[in-house]
Image 1 (cartoon, rainbow, N blue to C red):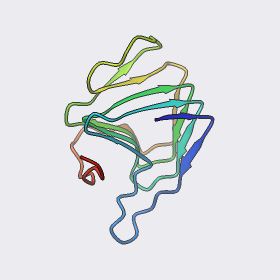
Image 2 (cartoon, rainbow, N blue to C red):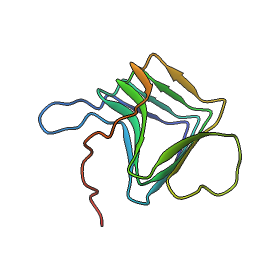
Image 3 (spheres, rainbow, N blue to C red):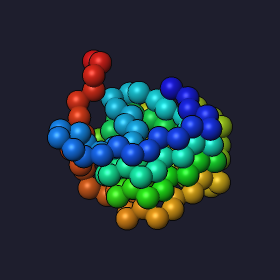
Image 4 (cartoon, helix red, strand yellow):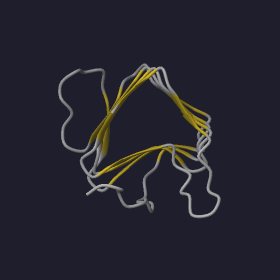
Length: 116
């Protein structure tokens, strides 16, 4: 999935909701270009076995800005080559603003994927 000049915000934790803005699970891939991910109760962008590229985007005012776990890992690069399995590539022109934690370091519970 590709999001350009979009906004993802306001995911709450009422009931059984997790409060995560974007989740990239089990081999899925997302590209954020000029996109804002903000004001989510827990995680702005969560990658668990998925791949992502974040270019010229802002991740702001989340409890955790970016979470990579279960085989996903974070790389800062402006390269345009194909993503490695599990790679979360963040370009230097992306910004992390006013998150309680910029990048999470412990595995957190995430929902199961809707599709196998």
